Length: 415
Image (cartoon, rainbow, N blue to C red):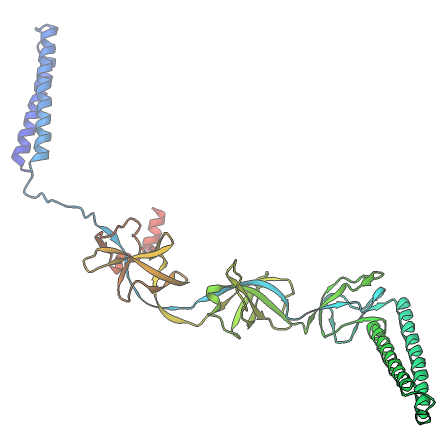
């Protein structure tokens, strides 16, 4: 603003103010009504002078005035689409269980348990006695089987003798051929009954196993329901983890099954934070139509701290691969479809739908929709629309502010 205009406005305001004061102080010879009229007149002049000053200040510019226009273009960070090394993993959750779960039942019915010889957590060998049975009833069954054998043996001897005597006089004509053949058939039937009786006796002796419940295979006893004095009628008395070999039955998503390979390792975490390594023993044989998952079996090493029934969480690392990727913050979703904002050469944004793949940390694999080298909006895309012009931030502007160090940082905390 030029000084002469400002000086004139200030002098006008000063003169009007002085006149108003003099009018208020002077004029003692005037009556009150005339004095009030004079004050109102000069007060109005002062107001007009003030308005004139404000108008001059707002309308008149000086030689040094500079017109500044604000930039309303939205500033955004821009990230180029490029290759990124992915280290994908598959989450695994499942229960530990025996690879071979052997259920041991009593060999006979209607007998009681007299003594328990093993308990949960014991290692047993094949054929080792696990419980002793009351053989009172069993002995009666054994004796009955032996009596049946003796009776069958006697009948077989008698039938064989009759046939041999009849066959000896075959040429004499004392007995007809039909009668001789009947005695021969009776002998064969008696031999068959004898064989059946002997088999029954062997079966009874085998079922009794000398009056013990025996382990059918070596392994770890993981469950015992047998109790002394309890009458058993075919119930399961013990469970054995054959060879003490455990596995994790983990549910795997349908999309991850094809990425797994038999023999690959997986790391499982126990409840105390310790870990154990397992290896994929069998891929899912089928997919559940409801959950779209399958059961994969991971074998655990023998002698680990894992116990049957534990619930384990783990993950399997897949092979590393280079893929096109974008940050998670650059990807938006609408009606179940993913899209990004692509920045063209004129810094205009365009909404482009993409096909997203697996995620690795803060990065998402891009399977289609954009190409390597294209620029996408990173931070600041929340209010963008198709065709908006943006102001890309340079690398230095995109870096977050670093905290002060040394003496400057100390002064800042003290201030």
